Image 1 (cartoon, rainbow, N blue to C red):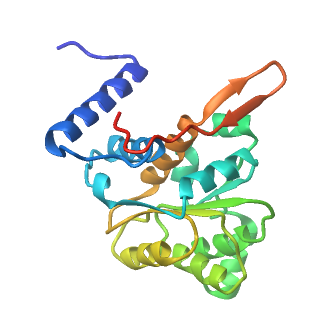
Image 2: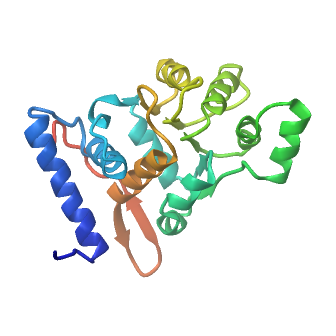
Length: 232
């Protein structure tokens, strides 16, 4: 047996296989934009699950909002160290984007004890104090996602966009449905599937789709032009 040892070649071949499966088993499927195609395919690549063709939802021009936050050097807030470890921090550093996971932050731990709430909920409350544009991403804390939506509704927090793909059985589907029903631009998955690795897939797909223009003095990122009905 011959082995493909180059990681980039493995990934390229994987995406070719994903497209061939879509062509053969999901004939007629049409992606709405290049960005959505990139996000959904990377979620499939991460999970091996083609259900994401039908369960990934995008509301209120969410991808444009996330791109705006990144280009404005905003903050990406994730709910787990798994997500924080998986996102491409090198590229985010080049872009000047701040990324945080506050779950183990001293003040968050104390806040959770004082208010008798989960640390994930306390992390949301703490993150809400940050100034500037923000994107929240949830892969494993549906209660924290629901709590953020409550804070937003009460005027105690703001979010430019939310990635809500928690996995599990308790309050998972309900939190996602509430997110999709909210006025906040959102990426969410229907049902119980999701997880921190799907957060990573979504975030990395977005930043990989951003085109890079490099000069001697700076790095500027511009958004891709979306093509309706594209298949790649």
